Amino acid sequence: MGQYEDLMDRLYAIHSEEDESRRKPLLDATVADDIEFYGLQVQTKGRAEFARNFRDGGTRLARTTPVEHRYGWLRCGWQLLLADGKPAAAADGRLYAGLQISQLTTDGRIRLIMPFLGLTPPEA
Image (cartoon, rainbow, N blue to C red; front, side, top):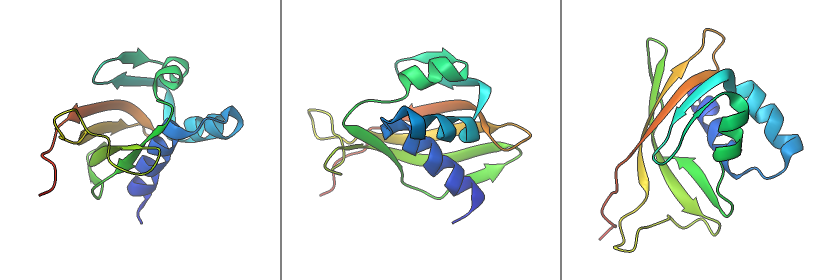
């Protein structure tokens, strides 16, 4: 696995980590102090505000594609999973999954995150 896949996997691990003593080092190593997050329902600025809004008990995020890197920007697919590992789905069966664009700092941490929701049809 490459450095950008590792970075995104660490970012997604923050989502489900409930233990602050394990979560804080992940945050510090992964996102910039001035992180900007433009989420589907929330917008945050700064690591502390980001940390308060980036987890949803009982679910976790998973990367679904390789990470593409270009000129300090990353792109990858993501999916929301339930505690049992099954994909989270809307009432009509469409999965909560999408595309994420992230910008890197010069030291390789994430400075900006913008996920896009692409509700995908259920598998046949």
